[in-house]
Length: 237
Image (cartoon, rainbow, N blue to C red; front, side, top):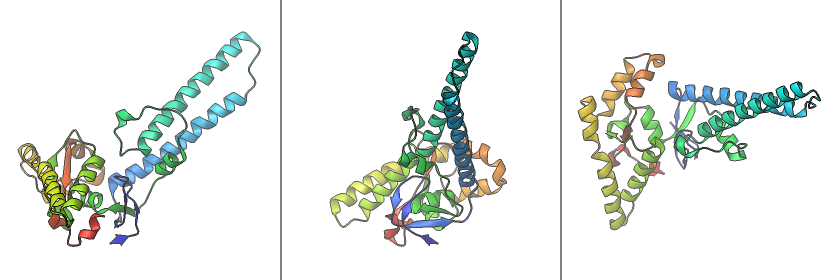
């Protein structure tokens, strides 16, 4: 089902077409984590502000204790900010995010939980519906060194080039797509299949709460959509 244009909560791209996903255990867990992180961040900030407003004791021992307590609170706040920023910018590699200053307005907005229902771009919707039409026309590939958001961006860019009217752009798009698809052989060697439906069947055999272990084994596996995944090429945008 089509939704309004906007930002995809998974890959963070702003797209023209989004699709509604009524329920998703991983995305629901992510939304819950966002809520808990916001609460923890506010709790740590309130504690630091309260300690800073508290008069500094004149007694040397009490002053030392107050200073140590404030330093501990500031360290906890810094860690909470780092965790919150990495969660808000989860489309970026964690190792690239190291600042612990206050979150910007945009980062705070990105931290707010979204859904359910969830409004996803066509690529992320397919990742969460491996037994759907779009995914069925695609292939599972092994790309452990690429962030999922980067995989989606590459896949989308390649298809946009292929769907263009310029021969040079079409060739370039196909070259990128072919390079991505070649990585299906590693998936087939590791899992004995590269078909998205087979991965969907494997996940379906487990209750949602018990799929974490299987998802961890699938870390590094990505879905690549092909031109046949799009009966309407406008959905790529």
